[in-house]
Amino acid sequence: MTPRAAIPPFQTFLEEHRSIVYRFLRASVGVERADDAFQETFLAALRAYPSLEDGRNLRGWVLTIATRKAIDAGRAGRRRALTVADVAAVGDANGQVGGEPEVFDAEDPVWKAVSSLPPRQRAAIVHRYVLDRSYAEVAAAMASTEEAARANVHQGLRKLKEVVRDEDE
Amino acid sequence: MRTSELKQLGQDRARRSKALAAAFADAALEEGLLDVGYGFADSPFGALLVAVTRRGLVRLQYPGRDVDEELADLAARLSPRVLESARATGEVRRELDEYFAGDRRTFDVPVDLSLTTGFTRAVLAATARIPFGSTSTYGAIAEAAGSPRASRAAGNALGSNPVPIVVPCHRVVHTGGGLGGYTGGLERKVALLRLEGATPV
Image (cartoon, rainbow over all chains, first blue to last red; front, top):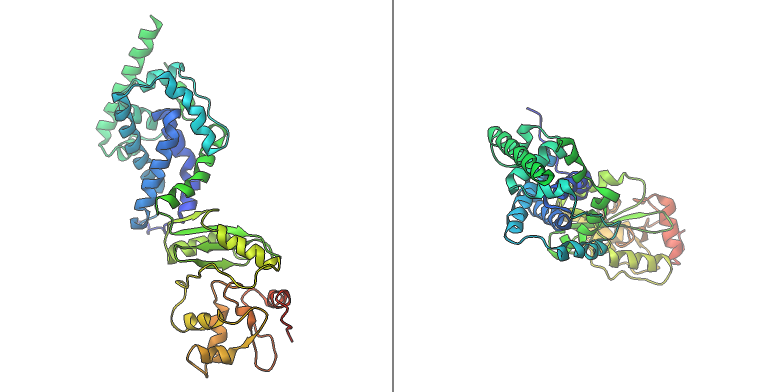
């Protein structure tokens, strides 16, 4: 067994994992919700941080938190469908943080297809194909089994193909 | 649809996550989740690392030591909730600016001596009372800390001062007139005493 690792200063942890967390959220909740989900993810991590006992696999840990936030956001999103006004408001929200705003195309066919998936399938697909993670890692992030993770990815892919086929017809 | 097309959704364009991470410390502060905020203050000696807790300034580090090492040390000894925060360190950075510009004689920012214990803490508390522009001796400080004969131990305690400049250990010299040592190096001790108009012998 490898020895426990020290818990790094939160700033170091944030710098090390911010990009992968952002990429995960952008692909799974969409660009207009990614900023809020990013902040919620790291606030939840900060809250729990002092009780961590081991600094190994912090990436897996924070992606698990992000996955929970993404699935929650996805469920909330299904109750209230996105409107054009929401997408237009993205520019303002981005301006507050500074930096270059992300360009988001509401008509992007890839995003439209992915956003039509149920939240768990969507999260599984993003872990597997956007972040290139193994099924064991997908399962850990989703607090499920490897079989369930495979099933989520499989069903998600089938649904994506259906959606794209319908569009083409 | 090919799975390779999915990749384009997961991009961190224009390093958006960098801007979000920079704004994160303010959110943490507002949520009351920032235990140690740090930043850098300009000084004639280079950039000083300053770290504050809810109680006050807990660490001031001269350039030289590796910053990552210092932060890891603070995380282990105080709390791992350590974030760079311009807002949390604003007051101490402003006061240091004024001090080096000759516009400030006493620091108003509170000091948190959590990194010290026992005799060291008593020595630093006594040292904090030495006024701007004057000096005291290791013997006098040892006495004020309750151990009149422990002037050597007082010197060691001052050498481990976690908040130099603000707790003015540079104002403590030898009874015979010698400068003694300094945590930041003797040249800095002399420079600080000159800045304050105290004549080092």
